[in-house]
Amino acid sequence: MKPVFQTRYGEGNGNCFQAALASVLELELEEVPDFVNVYQDDWFKEVERWLYKKFRAVYVFVTYEDFLENFADLRASGTYYIQVGPNQNDVMHCVVAQHGKMVHNPNRTCKGLKEVKYCEFLAFLDIGGDDAGSEREEEFGAD
Image 1 (cartoon, rainbow, N blue to C red):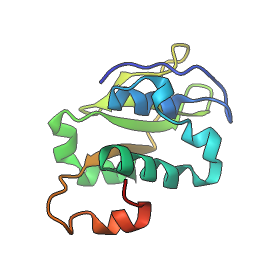
Image 2 (cartoon, helix red, strand yellow):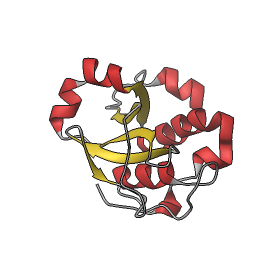
Image 3 (tube, rainbow, N blue to C red):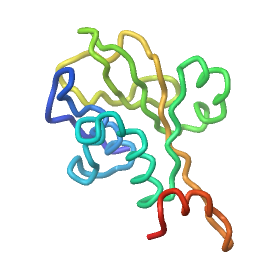
């Protein structure tokens, strides 16, 4: 994980997700599209497409309760993931977490989340064989 900080703030304009994703992927902010602000209603699909084509990764978005119930191995593994919830100003915000705790807040001006509502993480695919990943290839197109 490489800490990357957001450059824009405020509801409807902030780029905390872009910074959090860049942090998890250890990329510069400019290397990650600003999915939420550019694609708006289709941002999730565009994240999936970009991650699959660039990293052969699947983007997983679950409720916090589902994450606690079903992903204990991931939490224990030391994998970095993104937590989402309202910040102190009740604006939805993203931070990077590991082992159930925030390890990086892309916003230098706020304390983090009041509560966690969702968790987002990447599952990198080990693609082997001619047919592996063919469903994703059809959906997102081959490189």
